[in-house]
Image (cartoon, rainbow, N blue to C red):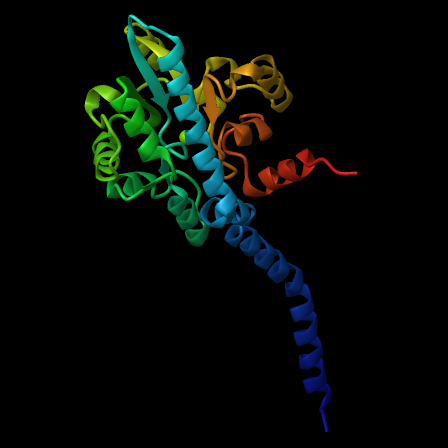
Length: 272
Ligand SMILES: [Mg+2]
């Protein structure tokens, strides 16, 4: 039989638990958000790594690139040197294992990025090695124009490109980022000595500066304005994992919380 004192203790215990429940749930939900900050990336990284469609699109891009080179050789008698400009990440090299690392370790870029670059283990994207070697064999200068860091990632990048059989992997063909993230000045430098025949990238900023820092609909209209260039002078590779398109989604605001970015993604969805 319970004494009145025991009843009182039980009552106080129950009240205490009830009072603590909201705090516990709040902490759990905060924890849950922190542990799933990259949940939205899982499908796009899996698509990149496991879909044969991704593989086919990569071959498609480099097959078109080869046709453009053949067309250029057949129709243009150029006096100046000829250049093919390619971005590196998600254009020539596949860094999706780094994305996988971010998901598994629940971290955000630039976590482990320089470590990944300096491992020099990234695999080339399907068709990249064959196409660039073909372009080089036909007298084109290949320029790797990338926003990897010139100060800390040059060595690892060259090592990776050479190890995977990519041509002209030398300092003078590698234009990494030293100051400006825009690639326009690097394109202008190349244009002083070369006719740029082809530009390839997974980000429209790899192609021209008209796309930079624009809102979602403005990016659409800039693409529409030069639509005849795609598959011609411009060749785009698929990257659903990250890019300028994602920056546009957040209005290029830096330092937003994971939960706010989640809300902005949901708000941007088209539905009915
Ligand atoms: Mg890229």
